[in-house]
Length: 277
Image (tube, rainbow, N blue to C red; front, side):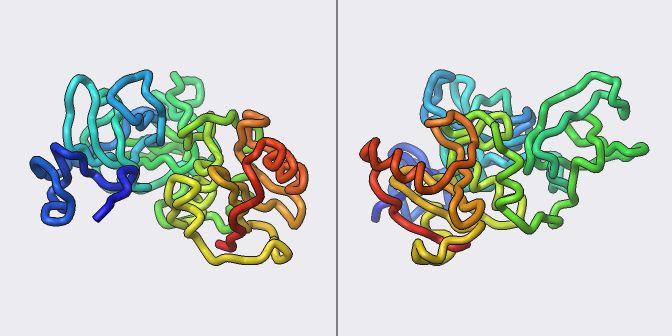
């Protein structure tokens, strides 16, 4: 039986205990829950600060650690299932279940319930916080500072238009493996837009191609996804796409026809799928 190493907590010498009898490994252990306690922490392919970033943890997201060595924790991001290495100093024991998520595209927390106090962050949309105190217009987050309450939403309260969420990322720099408002890649943009609307979403484009249902190109409308090999965009309307891309090195809007011609010229090829989510 083959396993996708991106989302399976297994390697030849070690695997999660839940995989015992399913995936072969030298030994099995129980993962220990931790959470990211910095605004964004890189999930890397190898235990090296210079290794490829394959994903990110946002503040408050859970990372199940199976092994810690040489300053890195090896484990699995619980929110999207991605496996990799995170610098151990970026992680902390969980406080309790999150009570709120960041609803603004990005925001600061403050050392005191005052916008004139020292700022912490910025924190990106969909980061998770545990509110432990309230004063005036501020909520105190465990392990952080005081957030303006209007920039948070209670867990379970979501938006309804993924395209409108994605539009708020316009101009954000392109960053391979990124999921934050300060930098993200094509699949990271789609994932964050769906998360803000209460929809689950895997990390990579080939995984996301299983979302929703197949449609014909003639039926494309706002909110539909367009896939190429290794790339994904969301339709803004019948003719324009919104996507994080390495051509603009940013989240940008452009006609689908222009992007299509550019990818053909670059030998990427025609779109591989059109999906309605």
